Amino acid sequence: MQLLTSDPWIAAQIDEIVAPYAGRLPAADLAWLREQLVETLAADERAAALLKAARPRYVEESGEVGPTAVSAQSKATKAKAG
Image 1 (tube, helix red, strand yellow):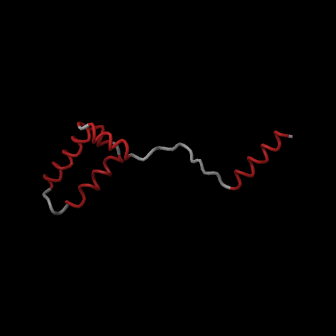
Image 2 (image 1 turned 60 degrees about the vertical axis):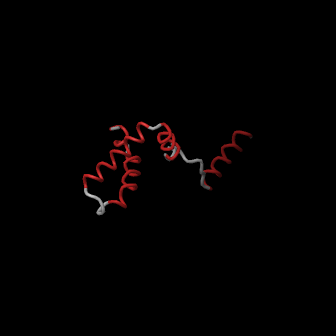
Image 3 (image 1 turned 90 degrees about the vertical axis):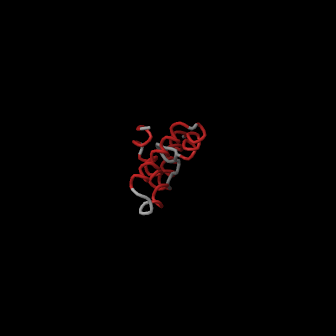
C-alpha cells in the first residue's frame, strides 16, 4: 500500500476524492477514508485495472512536429535523394 501512496499521481487522485469531505468529517475519518481507498486499490483486481486504465500514459517525445522541423527534414531528404 505504501507503494501506491508514494506515487504522486495516485496521491493526487485520492486527495481529489477526499477533498469534498474535508471540513465535514473529522480528521480521523478522513484518514480512514484514505486508507480504505488505498487498500481497495491495492487488493481489488477490478479497482487496480481501472486505476491502470485511468493513469495518463508517459510519452517520452511528442509526435508533433513544427513547421521548421518539417522543412529541415525535407531538406535532409532532398539532399539524400540527390
